[in-house]
Picture 1 (cartoon, rainbow, N blue to C red):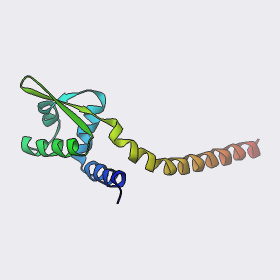
Picture 2: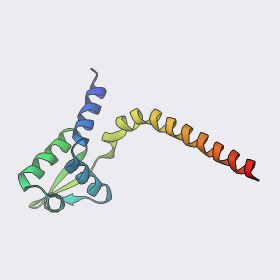
Picture 3: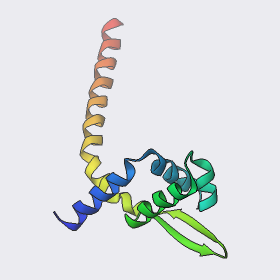
Picture 4: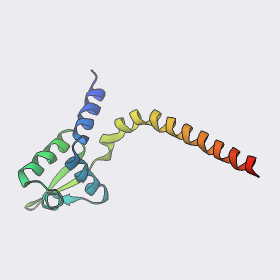
Length: 112
């Protein structure tokens, strides 16, 4: 298995957890401290730390020290490979929706 595939598998595994997805949703809008992230999750602080470690290890978040606080930011580039893998599926849905739109338009013309 190549490095890119292994990385995508690691990212998908990290995304499988709803608490980690919540963290990413928060970080999508703004950087946040570990405390802010912990307050948004219904789990104990050590659990939040473990989730943040997993997200750091797969490259989905960065962390920087700011005095006594750790500030976490989203690294969207870690999702590029997943996005590329999903593109054919998005294209499939676009084609199906275009076909549906065509059929709806055809039905409207026939009713006139």
